Image (cartoon, rainbow, N blue to C red):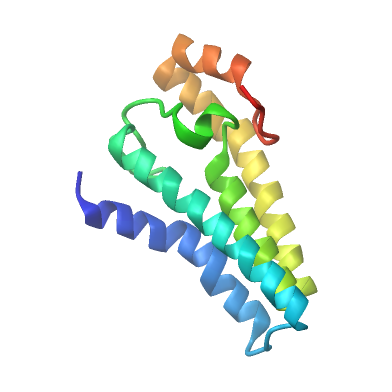
Length: 154
């Protein structure tokens, strides 16, 4: 498993969504009030940690990347995937919400909501049917046991 495959996928997908687009939306706006900035930065750190954890799990267990053009070869059900089926998107949205809070930006908050809605549609209509085809009964059982977005305490 090439580290460069992981880096490329992380730059192209979550990097664009959490860094490039918010930077365009903010266009040089400074941080909001210090309480917003601190709260927002804590959310960014938490979301980034979840995202990094999921990327490592995809590489080590899944033997693939987060990118649809280089998917995992094995179903990943460890770590945060034990509690929620889409922790990677949860991490990305948490980063965006943190940025929206830190910069007191309605534009970035709207972007976070858009990213969530687009990913919801993608997962329901494309990703989950594809996982059913690739992993069959293993995914069907996982889907029955683990919620899509709201973590369980399994």
